[in-house]
Image (cartoon, rainbow, N blue to C red; front, side, top):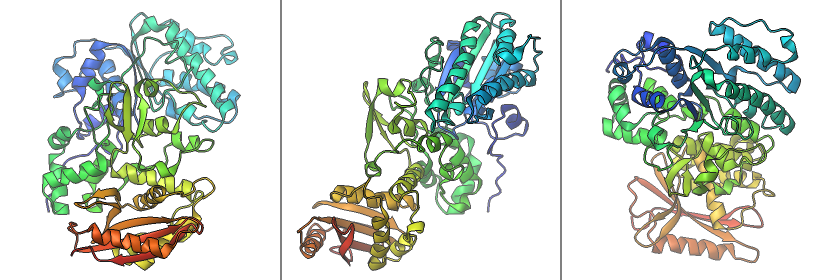
Length: 535
C-alpha cells in the first residue's frame, strides 16, 4: 500500500504555523490580493468548518509581516503594500453569561486582553471601570490615520449564544453595537477591516452605522474563497487521492464522484455558478479513507451552536418538508435578520444545512448540498418528529439491518414503532406524500439515500432506496376512514406489477413492497413484498 506523505492541515487555523509545519495549503491568495486591492471594509458569512479563522489568520500574517510566510504563493509577486499594526478579535472566545451586566464587563476585559496580546500598550484612563469600552475608545483614538488592520472573527458568536433568550439577546446586541459604533467613529485609523460570522443580525451597527461595509457573502467573485473546488482537490491533494483510491479500490475519477456526492455541493454565490467541498470533511476523509465516507461535518460537533440555541425557542419547520426545494427572495436572504424575524430557512442556509442550488435574478432555490448534510438534516428532523428521541430510543433501531437483509416483515415492524412514536399532534400524516416524506426522513437519518418518485418506462415508484445489496422499491397507499386496506394493498401490488417497478434496477436483490398506512391507526396495517417485476 502506498505511503501517504502529505501533511494535511486538519484542525489548523494558524496560517504561520501551517506554513512552518509544511502542511498542505490550498492557495487562495490570488483572491486575497483582489480583496485587499479592491476595498478595505468587508463582511463574510460562512458556515462553521469552512476555514473562516484560517482566512483571518492569513490576512493577519499578510498585513503584519508582508509576504514573509507566503513564499511560492500567488500573492508573493503582486503584494506591494507595507506592513501594519493588526488587532485580531475572536468573538467565539467571549463567553456570554445569563447576566447582561456580566457580559458588559466581560466585553471590556476581552478587548483589553486582546489589545495587550496583540502587543500594544494601553493608555491610562481614569475610572475605566465606569465604562468598559472607554479604554478601547481611547486606544483607538490614538492610532495614526490608515495605520491599523482590524480582523473580527465570529462576530455573531455572543448573539447566537443567546438566541433562546430575547431580553439577553437584545442586551448583548446593544453592547456589541457600542463596540462597532466606536470602530465606525475612528474609521480613519483603519487600513483594512474584515468581519466574519455565520448570521447577519440587524441593529448591531455592522450593517447600519458601518454603512461602508461590503458584504461579499454571495458575491460570485468570492464564491470559492473558502472551500475546495474539484480542480483544487486534484491539484493539491493528488497523493492523498491516490492513497484513498488504492485503499477503497476505485480509480480517482470514481473516487472524486463519490466524494462529490458526500462532501461537495456548497454554493456561496448568487448566480449559482460555483460550488465547493467542505474542507473539514474532505480532509478527515483523506486522512483515514479506510473509514469510508463518514459524516464528519455533523459528527464534529452535533448541532452548531447557532442552531441549538435557536431550537430552544423556535420551530425547525415541518419535517415533512424534508424533501422540498425551498425558495427565498435574493433581497430577503441577503438582508439582516432580527431575533424574531430569523426564519428557519435562512438560518439553515447560513448554518450550512441548505445551500443555493439554482437561482434567478430575484429568487434563490435552496436544497441540501450533499448526502452528508441531508443525513444530518434528517437526524435533526427525526429528533423533532420523535419528541427529541432517536430511532433506537423508540425501539426502531434495527430498520437498517432489516432492510439490508431484505426482510419486509421486520422492516415494517421497526418502521411502525417509529411511526407510532411520531409527535402526531404537531406532524400529522394526512396523505401519501407526507407519509413518503416521513419515511424518507427516517431512512436518510440512518445513512441511506432514498429517492422519491423514481421514473420508469411505465410510471413512477413512490420511493426507492439501496440498503447493502438490496434495492427497495416502495409503493405507499393511504387508508382513510372507511377505506378497505385489502383493496388498497391489491391496488399497490397491481401497480408495482403492471408498471414494472424495479425491472431496470441493477442490484442483485430487488424488494418491491406495497405498504398501506392507516390514518386512524397511524401505522402500516397491510404490506406485501415481491421480487422486482419482470425479473
